[in-house]
Length: 372
Image 1 (cartoon, helix red, strand yellow):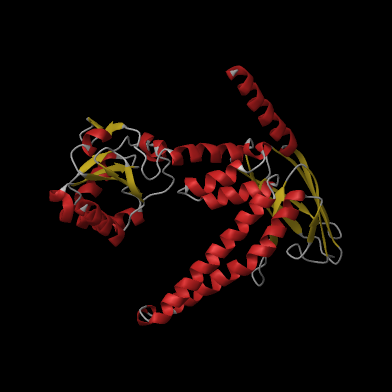
Image 2: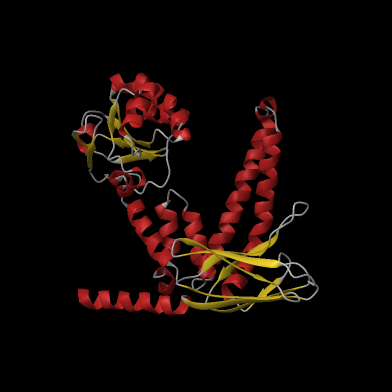
């Protein structure tokens, strides 16, 4: 039975590959483009940036290539010093994609591509909400400190959150209504972000057609969700062992046992936001260590000297470990860390209480947990 299921999964992956991988052609005609300008096509394939170019002839151009899955590309002309570039985003997929227009790539019309059609349809309904989000953010950035303390600012914040929630609701409705669209897969992947809300993202992912789930983007998201499921609130984290500053082994579970609540903190000496956050972590440690709060910091450094210097300089008198492997740090990969600073607050058994606590939020959460 297991071999049969494995065979089905392999066939599904091959089917997905056959449908979404292959040769593509991007061709266009700009009817009023009289000059012979160089047009460029930029995209990523197999982890490498690809750039193709050609000189337009009476506004016509054509690019050919091959991809293993749909990819985002940028097509257009580079701008001179006195004008902005004329370019646009599009998706490459097997087959022929056609752009037609007058003298502008940016305002041209794309046909012959289901993915570009679907992406434009979704953008059309999401765009009004995102335009409002941008406008509200710009308005907030122009306010003074005193204006941000006024009651009107809370109204602005509420409107901002409402627009974000509305745009997300539109995306969710689109995914549920278009389970076979590649745009739905990309939408779910984008919604997942760096720290996945498993309870929200997993049902959306499972609603997608299995062909999409077996694409490279789908398989990557599935792996990330597996990690998210095993690092969610209430879950007991998997144990790990790493090297302390003296290069001796130290187990996470041994540190957790020493406190009522422990912060497993991911950082690095080269990370500016981490160094800026360290005073807040020090403040919480000094306030609550005697009451049962402990910290195990895992560094994504690769140079022992820099790591140790930062610990001393930032005054961090708690447990520290690192494999000195930067983003290949085993503990970081185990817990799905994709950016620092990040952290998990766990109880005495290693069960997750909270994640991503920063600033006063960390102080207040530790204080509240220790009062329970």
